[in-house]
Length: 157
Image 1 (cartoon, rainbow, N blue to C red):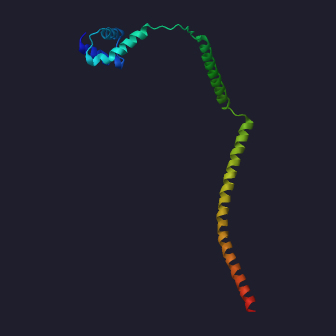
Image 2 (image 1 turned 180 degrees about the vertical axis):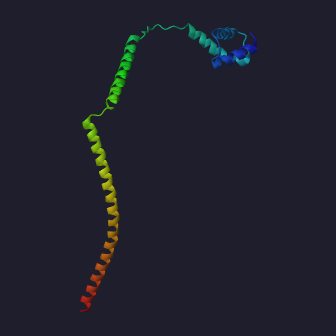
Image 3 (image 1 turned 90 degrees about the vertical axis):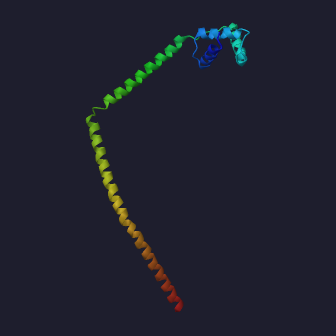
């Protein structure tokens, strides 16, 4: 076999792009004694592959029963359909509200509006109370001045 062909087959082999016939050609080439020096590193690899192909196991293997797996698979599909049916029935039942539910919804909306109005008025009230804090500081200063003058008058007497 030509050296250039062997080298291109090796490149293709290591890239995983060879056919079984091409791999057999490579095995036959590396089974011969006339191998170029730069390709001798691949000879033990192909000899190992040849030896591994002749090995066989004495252990008995049992293939798992695939019927059990398919049964679980069908249970999963059935459960998915049951969940979808439950969600669909819930969604379709929500479209028409009874008279009681409509009245409760209207009362909720009215209560919500009243609470927003109450919140706005409460915020306005707290803004005006904030000014009382300044008034309290001023009156406390006056009280301190009064105490100071009373103490001064007692001392002077």
